[in-house]
Amino acid sequence: MSTPSDIVIPLVDIVIAIDTSISMRDEAVALSAASETAIDIAKSSCPSDLQVAWLGVEGTWRNTHFDRTLRDYLTQVCQVEAADLRSRSRGTVKGGGAQEDGARAIEDLSVHFNWRAGTTRAIFYLSDEGLNGGGSHVQEQDIEAANRAIATAKAAKTSVYTYFGTTRSHDKERLQQEFARVAHETGGQAFTDADSIHGFIQVLEKIICGTCHKGANALATVKAATATDAATAATSPTAASEIPSETDVSVASTVDVSTEVATDHIVRNHALMAAGLGLLPVPLVDLVTVGATQLVMIRKLSKCYDLPFSQHRAKALISALIGAGQTGLILTSVGKWIPGIGGVGLTVATAVTAGGLTYAIGQVFVRHFEMGGTLLDLDATAMKDYFAEQYQKGKSVVKS
Image 1 (cartoon, rainbow, N blue to C red):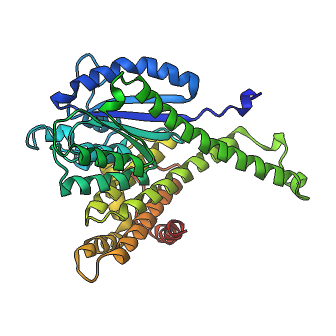
Image 2 (cartoon, helix red, strand yellow; image 1 turned 60 degrees about the vertical axis):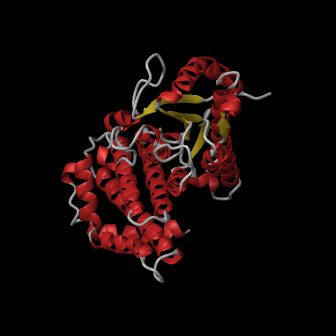
Image 3 (cartoon, helix red, strand yellow; image 1 turned 60 degrees about the horizontal axis):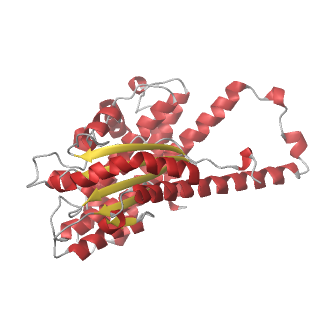
């Protein structure tokens, strides 16, 4: 029988984003109505510390949970500049296009959403049209947008679940295949209108429990590894002399260690995420997404030290720190266009450079914050040597 200490309760964050063109209203209503029952069932079958956000893509639905737009949430709650979002504003795309920017919504949520530290992440996107501004046919731009969304979600360790609704399109099969591809390549699951004939309860339960199981498995792996390390240390001849007594461990040192672990986790994760984004095949798009990742990292580090965050100040400090390094990153990115020079070689170079720079930026801010500094008093010039040292270390981290 399991004891309470054996039970693994993972943190689970799920963002449900829906295309707000008129044809999706029925799904918005049905999904909202099913949510309470589905969550109650999931609590019993797969316990978790669950948080769910409901966001409409460039629109909202009355009398549903989708009462806030994705753009409003990211710019106001997550303090992201509107110019840094991939999603397009309502009215800038023909028809209901901006409301149907599914791939771009996935990118923005993966990078900018205020995911909790240590949480297992999932996005559930619902629509009945193409992933790039809608449409009833799969076009090259839809495939490219899906590729970017997949790369970004994977780099952010976010699973994507998709739902493709009812359509009269003759290209229905290909549309469903693209939605399924995004889900499967990010570790999620694809659903269609056939799965919701009897309502959305089972669909939501599968998404919650599927995400929960991933989190529980990850925690169980960490727990097992920790237990193994502890057992090895206990049998070591020097173990007894190396383990401090309870009186040697102060509350302050425990807090310092936990903060150090958290900040190291944030820096490494975002460095690897930036490296993944550097692999995007589209020149300059990688630079935009890498820059956004660095800003999110600094915002999270500021939160760790309970410091105010200013996006404009953070951008200025990043530019000052990178200096010549940024030129190299731009050249490797633009080089992807040049026949005979671009391709795999420069793509990998961009990934390593992006990851190394992001790692170095993160370590500079950690050191500055540890010394009691804030965003307002960081001297980029004084940190140049340390930044260069951490850049080389960061490239090694990414390569390994």
